[in-house]
View 1 (cartoon, rainbow, N blue to C red):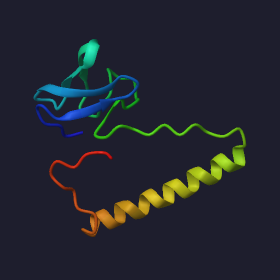
View 2 (view 1 turned 90 degrees about the vertical axis):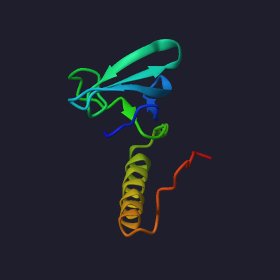
View 3 (view 1 turned 45 degrees about the vertical axis):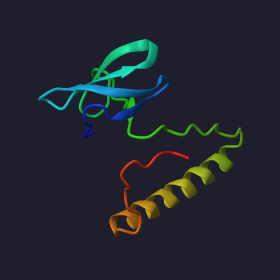
Length: 103
């Protein structure tokens, strides 16, 4: 992840926070509400957990249905849609706008 000082990021299960420091190795500190400052590796992990905890946008949690076939179909469709959006962004058809926020 490439973050900037004062950038708002989202910490999984804790909410929005603000980047307060960036270190030479790319790791960074984030101040999250009542949790204080937390340190993350350059890829948004805590320590060597192997699990990204920090994201540029607030991650969506989709509650999976009980039906495994329905869930598999959803994951396949969502992955295909996301891949198409990335292609559109790469082609310049979806531009990142300064100050853009979630609706």
